[in-house]
Length: 426
Image (tube, rainbow, N blue to C red):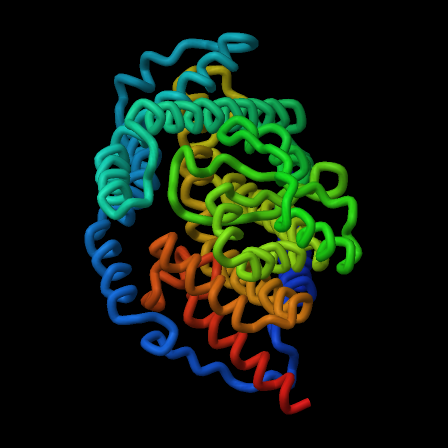
């Protein structure tokens, strides 16, 4: 392997990633001339609403963060134990073909079950609090079914992905960094393309938007905005939650907009607020946000693979990662290492990925304001979604950096008020 060439390619790819982030991210949703925002939590929400959100977050406590830490630590801990155990290394047998794939899948499933087990107390605690505050509507059997389905899907995808990656490394020992980076980018694009038709239906039924005033208004809006052919579906989210949400996924032929049935039910009392949600999702369609995020992700995962390859091609890296060797011990160590890296990478990238996501969401908010020109309805929408979903109303800086994919509700309300003020002054 030519490490100098790999280094140059790595630097070039990271340069492309930086360029993509700079050009594809809407850094100024209100435009260069937008005036400053002045979020006011106590003006946007009542004292009772703030107190309820605080009590809910306090009830969750540190458990969700502890679960994240444990899930990340598990594969690293397994790797450390395995690497230090001379007995495990000495008992290594030779594997190839079907036995090789079976061992990879067994390691993936074993680590995944261990991760689920260490996070289970936190997950159960969170579910209990969701029920106590009226957000969860599912029973324990349904909850366990969701957990099992998610675990099975994750193991299947991860096992297949690692098997293909290691096969590629073995088949092209001097060219695998470039081939694997390209393959990872392609898989990222294909994953976003097929997600709506493979993963989403596994968890929720999707039905057409029922006939009635809401459907008529939605059809008028999508036609007026130039998207008469977009598919709008209703998800049976109420089988799990009383919370309300909507999203756009896929692109091209697989693109659709999905409204939770809990959100659709709100149209009986406040149809304008629901239309504001639809307009926000149309903003994602107009700006090609799924495709934009997918392209950034594809370049990002390719750049990450090249950095990883550079690290693993060192003398120390080759001692840990030896996919060309047929001993089971080396294979297990390599698989666990890849699992540890794959588990850690999203949190390492979170500060940048979340920042980009928040800017994209803010841009879609501005589009919704322009499409509806109904600031009061938009503000009601943000207020009601935050209170019904018990969103965090006042995040600390590290919570925002590490976990916030959307701007805080009070920030989004302030942006709407600023947009309205700017329109009046034009």
